Length: 287
Image (tube, rainbow, N blue to C red):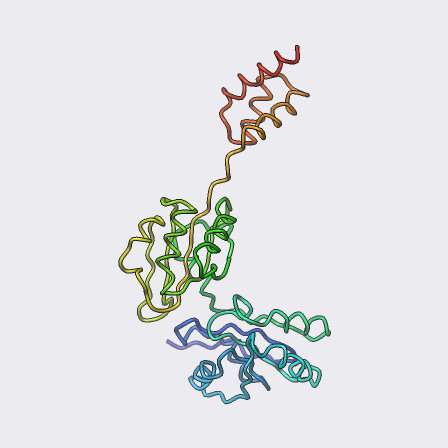
């Protein structure tokens, strides 16, 4: 089978945030190759990793290390390159730049200085894992890596416990088991989840189960490779008695007990019959 891709368009000067494959080198986009071929400078987290990608496509480019350790020193020189009308491509080791990767400051400074900043979309482990997890995708929250220590990790999870969005996060193999145990404890043992690893690679795997089952799964003891955990949305916390009482008293200012009870039941997800009894009692106290 043969195909003829659309012709490449000229690459104008500016900063290009270029998504790269997360494993399978054939996941590079044609537009990404156009930009990399035209780039005067390629910014890379690890020049060895990016060097292999460029070599696979017969490209030889000036590679400049750009990560959190050198960002402050490298930033001014990169802005000078942009001012000189050069094409600067920024890539991460895998996936889309700026997603749990350095570069936010550079993109912001380049934009503030008036230089064009272009996204070159492509592979993303976040979206790849979300697409196969079998969990709701209408609303999701990417939260990067959780803290490495259990106390801080549980505190972060507690903040996320009632989120109505599907959670997507990264984890390392050695920490995965402990992290899943904390998730089961804080988010709920029966909360549906999935662990995806080595996406697009030879040993790609996605294990779907409630959090408690994942925490006990021997396959996830200390798996190798890049890992994405997807956790189904939580339930909103039930209203407290004080909150229900306040809502009921407010509703009774403009409605009778039955109507007020129905209104608060719908708003807070509480039992209408119990609310009606309380509404009648409040009216009795006010009589």
